[in-house]
Amino acid sequence: MPESRPMPSIGARCHELRIDDVAQKREWHVIYYVGTLAIAVLDVFAKTTRATPDDAIRNCMRWLADFKTKDKP
Image (cartoon, rainbow, N blue to C red; front, side, top):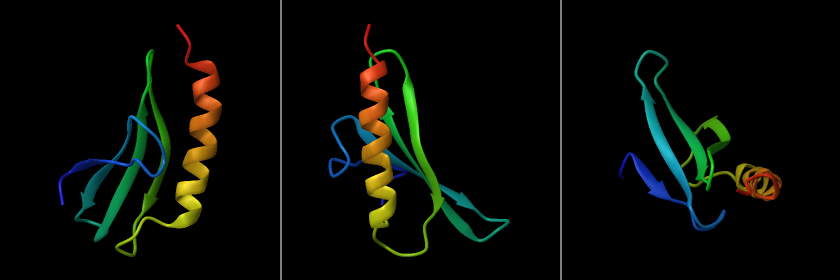
């Protein structure tokens, strides 16, 4: 899997970045949105399964909607 991949299930211009934490033996995932004026970090979590948790997707969609109302030039 690439270090960063698009997350169209959350929205356009959303991506997931994988970060290996060797010391803690975990894999962290950062879901972010590339906006017009800024990059918004929507969620950060340690992934324990292959699929992105449903609650993380729902939370990101909610944060994204809130961010988009403020990301106007």
